[in-house]
Length: 230
Image 1 (cartoon, rainbow, N blue to C red):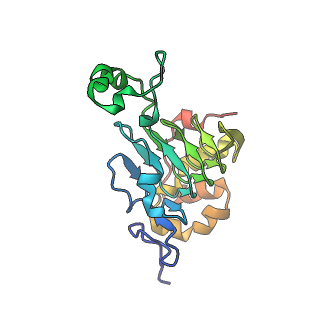
Image 2 (cartoon, rainbow, N blue to C red):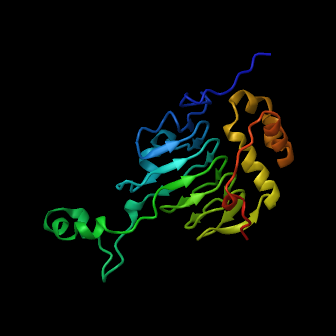
Image 3 (cartoon, rainbow, N blue to C red):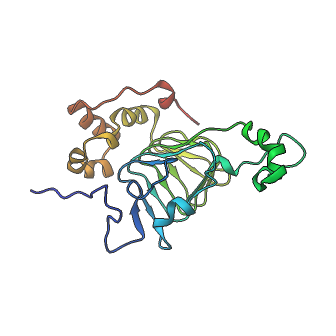
């Protein structure tokens, strides 16, 4: 049987639905990196993702998003350029207006600490109108509930929600999370993903681990990534 799989290089994987775009072929900014098959769904202009959904990207910090992520309409990533100085009396950004204001204050802005890149793992689901704050790291397999404001790191396979977002529950126990991180199905060859997509959707962590082991695809995972988070 001839296998037909989506082409990750095609902007609109569903030709009849322009509201859905694969982000990898869309983004052009060197500050944004997106893995294959990650998509954004927005009925009001999905192709404006870089301009409308990645905000205040003035500094060197990058937004890195893994593979097979699902990003719902209105999800926004606030970058470090949104930060204002808080070390003194005023938070007013004098520097951005140029002239003598800039000359007198530029060193304050350039010396501000940064939380670094915003990093999203693989197979992460963002619900409708989430907001992700600068420098946050979101682990593989996490779920961000609709309307959440993510201000802190999210462990792998954890569901979070609220403002600020708090853990609701873990999707799997520690042993199963370790199995899934070692299996890293998002890094499998796409033909193997296609062959096992039903198991990936509806199977168990043990099923995924078995397939990875059978094909010699298991990875070493740092202990910190597998640690329990409650």
